[in-house]
Image (cartoon, rainbow, N blue to C red):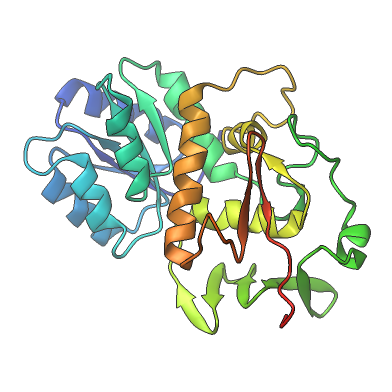
Length: 271
């Protein structure tokens, strides 16, 4: 892919670590590797990577704890590599801040595709255009800005620099989030999902459509989306709500449309 950037590989199996290191290095990334969790956290701190591959079954601290520690200072994309069959392990990893997962044994090409997807993930209003499973067609930007149900867009020069809704502000340029002027730390995936929902306004985004987008398959209208992939979206949304202090029962920002997906909650009267 000719990518530029930095990757950290955290894996205790020597053979797998060497394979992952070689695959990522051949793709153009500068790669650093660690054989346990403690060294892995230190490598992330020293090298400030764009993406991390992380084995869940490490010999000292497991991948869940590594993710918790890394998320205290890094927003790098985290891809979990797991041989565990139980879905609960994957969901626990996502719940503490991982972005994606690949189950062992995996093909090197599959892992590389996941890394490429994360590093190339598009930003802005084209995120979900044309995605299957949406209950309403994508609004063109002009219509979205003029729609009474769309979020308020803050204009800086000729381009929108931020989105605001019910006291929630996203600065797209700096990728920062504030709630009532207090900054909230989101992972990259959480920020991207929130931006997609805010740009769509009251247009419902299906769980399937969001899962296709996360894996760069938004134009595969007949593409299969697994239950695990849909569940991952639900976990990311739950994390997002928790960090924002939002309620699924009485949402201020993210509203669940049962059996379909998610949309932006209606504007409150004071906004």
